[in-house]
Length: 253
Image: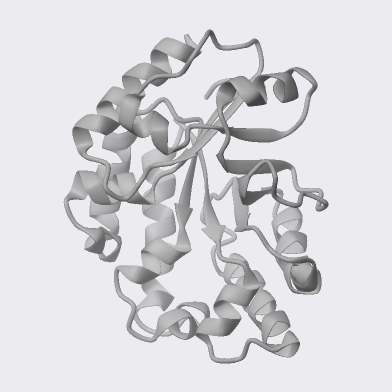
């Protein structure tokens, strides 16, 4: 892995599915290990994030209630998936899960009240305990509202307790950023716009928006310090992933 000052964060669920040719790949941990290892051969990522929502979508029976309640098949499959991801990334990249905002889970469970949101936060925190020995390096949270601060507290506390970095994912730089994670992951922000923030030492990652995955090009030269981040779009073809990896290697040097 590169130094902490030259990082490439990739939300890789769609890329793994593209290489496997199916979204149901998450039901087969050995295949996930194979496809993720192949992905890391194409993309020079230092950090690989996997959305829990994508994993759940592969086998939605029981929904978030089954996954968070560790009911079958998730009681065995989620730890197996975590081990598969850890095996594929070992010595190559740090990895972690992207968790949904507690309100998203609360709504899916049928109780979007304040009490329901707090309960969802506790369930997500408990899920981290379930995989605490799986070799995670970080946890990312989708952007949450001020009303969810109490709900995300246990999640962030558990992540810190286990020694994991904590990131929050937002849509763009205009999003409210009053929280204090270890890193902000910005979906839509050009590298040229972020460069002054990187120079100033801010922990804001981005630059690999949708346009990058189609054009496979980054403007200018890489600064001495950069924090790239992007989500591979769902429709991305394997050839485009390879081209994007080539462009990343050229830009990062």
